[in-house]
Length: 112
Length: 112
Image (cartoon, rainbow over all chains, first blue to last red; front, side):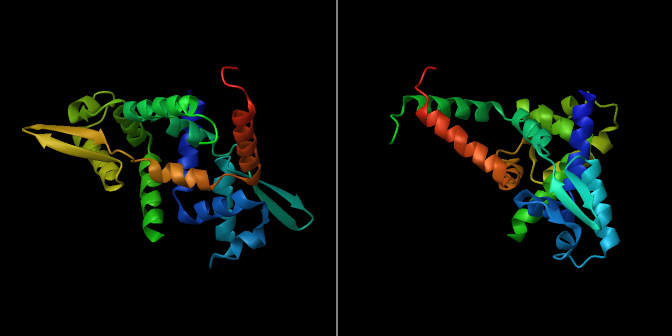
């Protein structure tokens, strides 16, 4: 699946920067206009726009312009590729713990 | 939590490289000796050792030397910091879907 690996590369590279990660954290709460996103960072607007472009190219965010205001949103399912990869890295011991968890859920009476 | 953010930075930077990610994928299956890890990559041993050092500094792998053989393992809980961060980024819509899932699990008779 070369597409999956390219997507994963882009997502991880985008998230490896603390500013871009902070933007994703903010957008997970709700969409925001660019000036709102810039506020917590002592950063020139062009630098923030460059970070937003990296996030957009990685498929993590989308943006829409209404008049002079650009609103940025976290793309639904943006982090799915990372969830998927992490799931694949479960070690044999973790798989065993999962099976135990499922067993306990099934055999424990509800409400306990 | 500055320590958490530093750890997350290091883990994401380490995983943003496809070779290092492939090493983690291999080690999730079982520990491996260095020569085994080097085999799938057409890469000089010193380059691989450098990748292993980045992974070790990020707390993702540990290694032990027995005689002349170095065995590398995925550190238990190595990816927990990334699981944690991803969990925190769940959008309001995803939280709602979670609650629906819990409700269905609780109200659906077992065995269906």
